[in-house]
Image 1 (cartoon, rainbow, N blue to C red):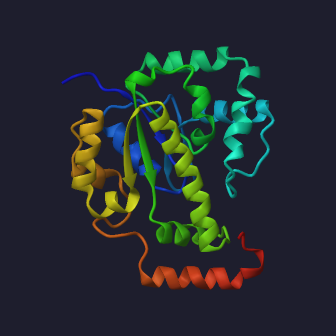
Image 2 (image 1 turned 45 degrees about the vertical axis):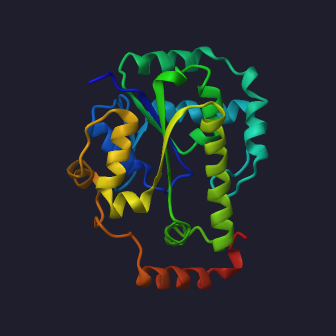
Length: 242
């Protein structure tokens, strides 16, 4: 088998990227010396990558609330500040990752910083996995996190981020594969076949089932979950983002 390309997972967050990165770890992708762990799950985010992404935003002076709001100008604002950064830290990190190749990068900040990282990674030897959620499923998950917002705001936010991601990979003629998280949950065989074709891996549905903590072959949220989410929304209606 030919050598594998490195992988960058691009997403808006809360879109199944941790499951996807865990799946790639089973295929031999290096996730870092240590990964960020939340209270109840491993994010599979390289801790040093996360630290450096935070440093990029801080050093550029970017202080927008990118976790809750989107504006296309965010990308331009960051891009205009990249030339003022000390590149040695980031070049060294990319070199360290290449010594452990194939590697996978996953951090929701990457949709903001990937245009900077592109200076230090071999784009011809890197594949990009783009993962998003169905709009209604995403809205329910957002409300369950007590992030109160209208459906329209949630969809605009996620679509805006995803469009900038697609713009980046298509504009640079990169290798990429688009994934809807619900498709991975419901029809893992089909989606994993697509991943294998893109990455030259030999993953199977069994690998997905080994890392997925929910109920497979169905969407995460059903009618009852929607009703519960609506109740949360109505109780907190006055603080909604719209």
